[in-house]
Image 1 (tube, rainbow, N blue to C red):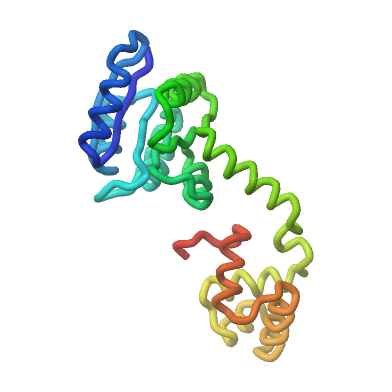
Image 2: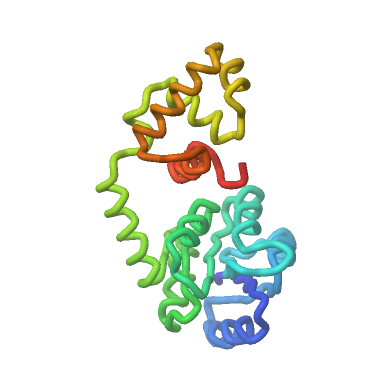
Length: 214
């Protein structure tokens, strides 16, 4: 028996999923939530095997709830549901610990397969999300690996710039002069073909040097 949580702020969406799964003898719906906080509370109380979690919910997003749930209950399998197969959303969902990603207009069989895969401990992304991920991987493989061509000092300067440190602060932290910091920053921009500090910060986020909230 697969114990399921349905979390979506749309009442009709929850009803539709409930109706879809109600006839399955191997599935038991143990709770429903209309926001991320409610979903997290039900996970704590009922320990579902699989949580169907909408990405956009009030109070706490599905991504936040997923990250917190996975930290507290590593065995729970979360399937993120979204209206979009946006690349950044898919990547954020997987980084948060989701076991899969389903676009809400996916077919009945897609939902059933996703739940079964998640319950077996496997990952599952719907066809449209899989195409997006395939394109992302192909593009990433064609691109030079971020930071590999930078020196250790350049990586240190990039990290501190991305953390919002000023030239003088960076110099003090690294034990170098402000002029040397400026030289490293200029060379970084030349190496990466970037033209201002904001672009350096965005690059650092894409390269995984810092998290977006930093």
